[in-house]
Image (tube, rainbow over all chains, first blue to last red):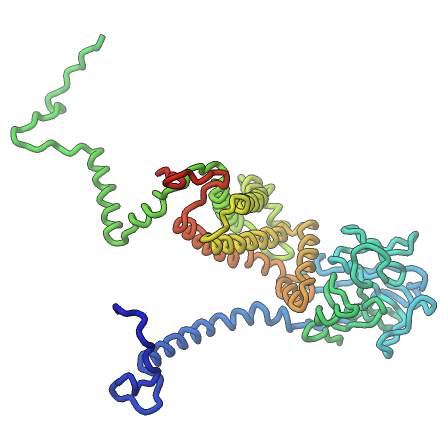
Length: 226
Length: 264
C-alpha cells in the first residue's frame, strides 16, 4: 500500500462493494475466518490449560480432609494450672512430619474468658505449638508460665495471648471433648486477641483483629469432624 | 648435523607425479573441506550463519570492562545448576518418607555425589549473588534506561524466578532446617492480603504441610521454573543483542563523532 493512511474503509460490506453484501452486514469473510481461527486456538489451549490448573489448585484450595477425634489421655491427667504436652498426628501417612505437639490443661474459670461465640463450652483447653509469627514450634516454659518461640522471640502468656515479640494473634487451639473418661482433641481453630473463635483456622502471621479478619479470608470449607 | 634418511623400499616410495596431473588433495585438506561442506549444507537450509554473525560480531562501546561479564557469569551459574540438577534428579526421591534418606545417599554413597550436590547447593548461592551483582551493575551504569527498559523488566522477572528457585530447592534435602524454613517461607507468602492465604494453600497443596507439598515444590523446582527461566533468558539475550550494551557512565561523549566504537 503506497498511501498507508487513507480514509478508513467503511465497516459495512455493502459500502465497500463486496460481492454478495447485504444491508447492515459488517462481518467480512476474512474477519469471520480470523475470529474462527482465534476462537479455535483459545478453545484448544483452554482444553488442556484449565483442567491442568484446576488439578493443581482445586484440591489444594477446596478439599478439607475429615478430622478425627484423637484421644490423648484420661481427664484426671490434666490440671488447670499448668500444661501437659501431648503429641498428636495432624496429617496421617507422612511419618514424623505429620505429627505435632499440643499443650493441654483443664479450663480455669478465673483465667479463661467465656467462649466467644458462646455455645461450645469445652472443659479442656488444647493449645497449638504453632507460633503465630511465622509458624515455628513454641514450647511451654513452666517456670515463666509462658510459651516461648525459638525463631524470632515470640512470647505468649499462660492463656496463649501474645505477651511480646512479633506474633500477631494468640496461639491457635484445638476443639476438645470428653469421651469415656478420655480427653479427645479435634480440629484446629484460630482465635483473635479477644479469644473470638474462627473455625476456619488461619495461617500464622494473619492478623484477625479489625480489618485483618477481612484481609485474610478463611478457607472455602472447614474441616469436618466425624 | 642431519643424518640421511634410511632408504625406503620401492613399494612405499611415493610415486612421482605424472606430468599434467593436478596436485593431490592432502588428508587434512579433505577434513577441512568436509567441515566447510557440512556447514554450508546446514547454512544453505537454515541461514544460521547470519544469526551467528549477528549474535557474535557486535560492536561494543569503548570502556567495556569486567563488570560487563556479570551477566554471562550468571548464565554459566544457571547452566551449572541445570546440569548438576539433572543428574541429582537421577538419585533423588521426592517423597516425604524417602527424601532425606535419598539426599543422604547421594552425599555419602554415590561416587562424586557429595561433590555434585555441593556444586548444586553452593552454586545456587553463587547464582543469587551473581544475579544481584548483575542487577546492581545495570542499575549503577544506568543501563536500564531507554531503550532497554523492557530488558530490565525481563531481568527483574528472572531475578524473582531465581529467588523462587532457591526457595523451592531449599525444601528438597528435607532436613529440619529446610522443613522449618519452608514453613516460615510459606507463611510469609500467606501474609499477602486477600490472595495470600490461597497462595500459601496452593504452595502447600492444602491447609497443612503434607505429602503433596514436597512433590509440588519438586515439580515447580525442576519443571516449571527451569522452563520459564530458559525462555526468559532467551528473550533477555535477544534484547541484549538487538539493543547492544551501554558505555560506562564515566565516559564523556567526545567532540565530533561521539563515543568511538571498537570492533571486538
